[in-house]
Image (cartoon, rainbow, N blue to C red):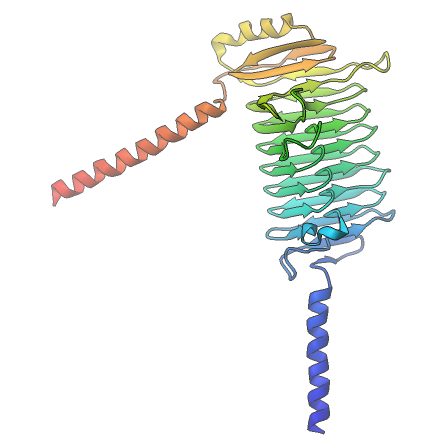
Length: 337
């Protein structure tokens, strides 16, 4: 009898261990919701594979991780959702796909919010969204790929907002890869305090490829655009796209802070530039574009946001000031004692 009870107990324990190892940490919660948290396994090696028509919410919460690169032979996306009104939220999370990072189906909108997180696509894009009025918001995050565009969108109206983030193609020999490839539609891209590094296997600038449609690019404070080429880093390019249709009208809005005493001068310089192909330096940062129709100055008078090199000087000055304060306090303490 004891041996029978022991056997049953052992089977239950083994079954529990098997369940723990087999089931993904990304679990279906309320209807049409998948939550990826810190439960084992973390990182989840299977990711979210839900390629059927549905309205789905995917939450990767604080401390949660997905890493399908742990199974390289399967070429799994980290998060794949089907057609439907999908919402994908990454909050304080790490998500890496052996293939793409985030992939959605061809119909209906997908809203992606990445906040204080890392998203990586290893052999494909970091984010590819299908048809639909998609929206992507990336805040305080890092988004990388090693062999494709960072963000690839298809023919519809998209809204992309980048704030305090880094988007970078890591492999300089991986071909001609843009930060953003927007294939048609009326798209709006707003960028602030962000570093964008594309890649090119030839010495040709890449960056934002807006393609056809009525597109708007809004450049706010401290937008650094570069292209990694075999000859090193060069300045990136905003390609508004050739006009495949007569109604195509592409706009770049310059909305950064500039010193008050330079506001009129910089405004006049923007207005004098050729929208179809030209460049400008504002606050020490270089911007170049082709095939656009309109340049709009919406500059804000005030102190200019420091450039990358100026941030380094400010940090150094702050560090030296802190050290000096500590030294003075220590001398006063020794003198008083």
